[in-house]
Length: 452
Ligand code: ADP
Ligand code: ADP
Ligand code: MG
Image (tube, rainbow, N blue to C red):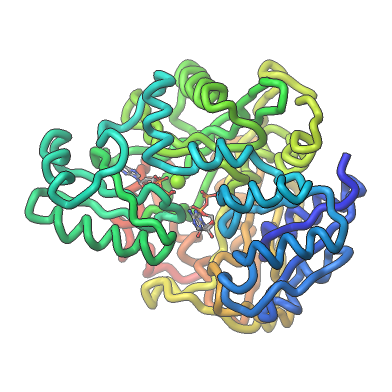
């Protein structure tokens, strides 16, 4: 097993990983930007190294400084968390060149499966259903118009390097195509430094259903069931749950088998997620995330498996200690992302000092965050400040538990999306399970009216 791990991330996920290490008796090294010197992950880790200025480019994306810190501190492995360098092939390679284990799949697998248009092609070869779309990347607006005509409108123009819901635009018809393509391409270039684009049929009113995968170095692959992440705003998840209330055991089995096939075919190792769109009983692969995901806790709650600890064990060369038959699902879990943002000002980020915080507790209530009283959320990074997670015997009780937890929680000093989440939890469509990825957009004005 590893003796010491460096966590190349910040915020709640860094705290989550440090906690897993502490419980396993592994020493931890935090890295931080000058803006994060008072952050919780810095205080919890055994050692902490400043790696640069506030901007991510200077710090959390600064590979040289992170690797130097790792070498100087004598770590065995680096956990990249999500975002930042987690799906960066160059970084995964640098780690292995320096004799440090990158906790994730190999650089080769990241470069294939982390690139969305390439992953699509690989899934087609594996026989996993994908959304109808372009064969590989689309070189120009004009090539795109020809392909879109073949696919049939509406189409979704997507960035191969995309993530976090950015770099994608719908074109309803040929007239809209050029400006949609150029807008998405520019956003992709700015956000990811890569403007490679591809096209998919825009699936109307689908559900977003994803499967959590664990794969060890010896070819053993299991799935930990699905998560329903259809509650999204601008293609970014807001509320996630497991299991999906609408899926029959037969469909779960078919989708789970497709997810395992996808992982095996790409020689996948470590934790990963296969994302599908579900329309009726038909499902289509959209992408693979070759890292831990924000919403992993809902799967942990219903399976009892600590996914971050599994990631560490797999990277250390341990064999999976269970097989598919051993994975069982108990009850229902829901997660609300708590963002420091003001929903009424178009979800404008709301960094600042947390003057007062009270965290709800009790049976089946979990709060993963990096907040504490007096902590000042810096303006430089993602607005997600924490995640509230509940587990109960069924979906209805889980909704009730989440409502009561939100009624109890107090976060003062910054704006949050808590009342927005609360409104969703009271919406009839949500309660009845009749929602798809268009839910938030369709109900936006109504959801914004609710006061806690
Ligand atoms: P998940 O897929 O786990 O639900 P998100 O899509 O919300 O997660 O992304 C998690 C975090 O990682 C967010 O902070 C998001 O901005 C960031 N992120 C995701 N993909 C990328 C990417 N390709 N490049 C940079 N940041 C990304
Ligand atoms: P990201 O890397 O940003 O997470 P995804 O490809 O996973 O991008 O898509 C994010 C979300 O966008 C999906 O969960 C879904 O709501 C929507 N989406 C993606 N592709 C399609 C599609 N072909 N048709 C309809 N909606 C889509
Ligand atoms: Mg996605």
